[in-house]
Image 1 (tube, helix red, strand yellow):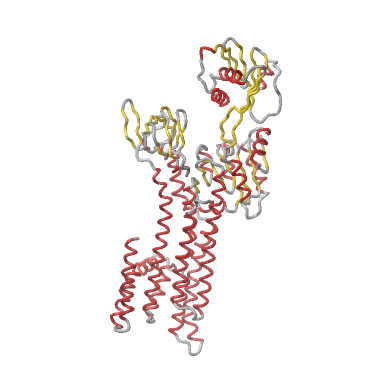
Image 2: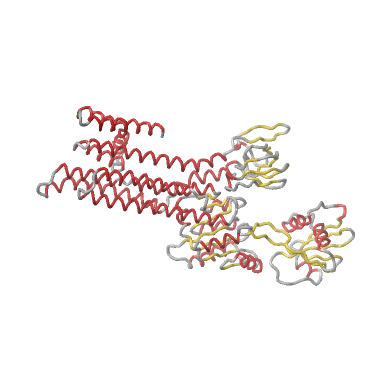
Length: 614
């Protein structure tokens, strides 16, 4: 870009000198005009020649070359040089815009780790991340980037997840928690067991998604590509007819006058503004979305999202945290603390998620000396003797098996019934928690003119309806198997308009078929399954439902900018083409209609990168 700028500046200096000298020395000024033209337009003419040899005749290089060489042929030297100068200024702006967009996306490449500290025996070896195997132990020191996905074995620290999620607030990790490659370890030393190979790790997937995003074109971009392919030869034919036919059929018409009009027509007709600015708008939108932790796999999906009418959600892990927690404790003739303690002790040997949630709620060290005679009833619950008391904890089937009367009311969640010495002692309600921003996301989606919000879940009716009511969803379907979800989605498809789109948001392996079937599949990428991320078109890196609203706003903003560029470029060009055909526009107006419109459209495309307020 610096070389291009220097060349333009030198050509401008020579061009101005030629204009000053022209009235006094035609020969010297002509030499300077030619020198300025070769300096600023030589590469364009060479590209046009190479393209013609390769069968690609009708492009902007050909249009610029024939128009400017034609201007020299009819003695319009200053205008010939000026057209090429302004064209190169437009190209410079385009290069700057593309470079800026690429840098916004290329900043993601900084997440690529350079090495991993692998622990082998007493040694710490520095290795390439792609040479480290699953199950190996790595050490991540303060200030280092996490090289591979893994599980923390020792230490606790704060992680900077900005590159993955777009969130500036560090996340705390401790023993037993999973961490993703691409984050930066801010303070403590972490010992981590590798759970995925480098090729399967989060950092590699993100880079692949971003690098391949531009290969899937939006309908707007496909239209512009086809438009330019047919448009350019048509305008060249019209220009040729404009130069030849009027001087023959119109009495007194000047051949040079009509050639000038034809050349002006050619300069105006160059489709640079459309060919450059439309893809650049979508490129900027994808780059801006990545800054906010939203990865879009192609501009076609970004364009489709702007037309979304129905958003369908999975429940667990999407609208809820996917982590069971104790919500309520209902004791009978004892304290809540005592009931929770005895239940946590009885469940202490189990690794079931419900058992883990009870131990987590108890929050104290389990003294195994207090526990004897542990029994597990498959599909029912557990029994243990604690401090001499016979404690049985499980579902309603266990209570019925033991012939113990129990609470049988309607609740939203999983109920653990507890009996002590064969007498009912109460129950503990365990349920998934709704994500903090889920209700806000549904509200904002409705404000964004989404016609319908739906939830599909395999959970019970009581749980599904409770979550649906709490979030304000329009419709909830419960107790669905993965196959049922696809069938239900087919029904929901009939509710949208012909041009409207349906987006599905999920995170699990069971969501992969539905994500693939939807017009736009959106996966929760932080904790979501690999199958869901693979099947999705858009990935939300921090698992926040509110980012779906942000993605829709970015898509609408990007599409609006692309449409503005298309209408502006085509409108100005058509107006000046008509004026030039009637001899009412000079090459200077033609230069504005070509290069000026290109520059303004490119500058407008920059706005797609600005996503802070969205």
